[in-house]
Length: 391
Image (cartoon, rainbow, N blue to C red; front, side, top):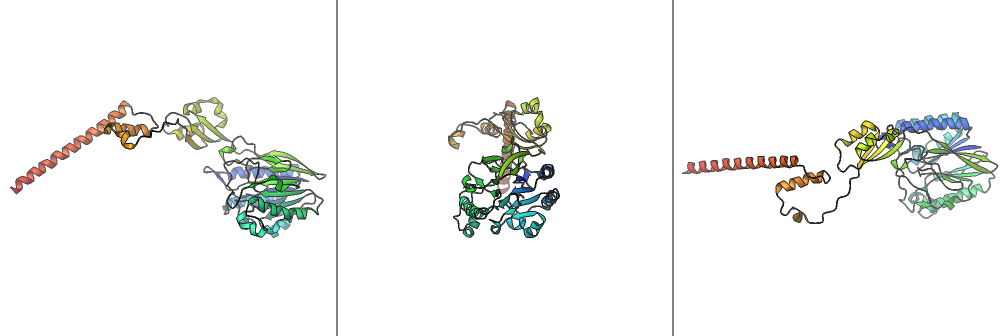
């Protein structure tokens, strides 16, 4: 039997304001093709199908279309809820849909009840928030303890089955390396779950961590199929193809398509705009850090002329020593013109005011002084005229 393990689709997510739905749909198209070509019997999605509890209509339509096509391609589909999903909304109609080959597990009631494919028994575990489910599982309110309690139910059922056993779980397992795009699940108890929790299973199909990795033999994160943070630059996104034969499992990574690559660029603006080695990133989503000693004018506009899909722009200017004197000590002995030139230097990142700028400030002060003196003379004249009227 052949099975695909994938997770963390996060349908409907945006990437620094850029929508990812087109990239996600491209992955789902690819997944349908893999199911057909490899004659896959089941697709397991280990949580975070949606990016939010209330997905947009276009996002729901994308999932609906993908599931229909996967079923038509000959695979059954197993969805378990993640911490981004609304368990209630995702699980609506699950008992009816199961008859069509779509198995959705989002509640405690399904723990320990496998999806039996004949060649394998799959135990989908929804995301288990300790503060919510610990009493029902008679467990301490930590991620490790609630998963241990859930796995006890799984093992109790699996003990009577001769076929390979696969567990699906959405959690942070010890040894995993995170990216910037995962939501912290530490609230409600200790976040880390030991790998030993899944001991005895033929395969643990994990979700939550977006970086693909194998933590131990048969304990693997598929990772997200689409990059969702610049910390994922350089990662090869994939799905895991499981080949089950004679009670053993062989795994193969199926590389996911790259809708638009991501890149991190750092350097002086002029160098970034001229370096021919950066041509490969001109169509990428870019994070750009400029190291110019002063902030270039219209920096984003200049960067986007070459890298039009730049999403974030930062500056890494050299740190300046901290002046620990009090404000009174810093301004002591300095006139108004010096203070205004100091302000110019401060807002420009430490570059002193030029002679021309100093002259502009001086001219402004002179105009102010002239206007002030003229006003004083006019006031004195009016006072003198008033005195004469009284006399």
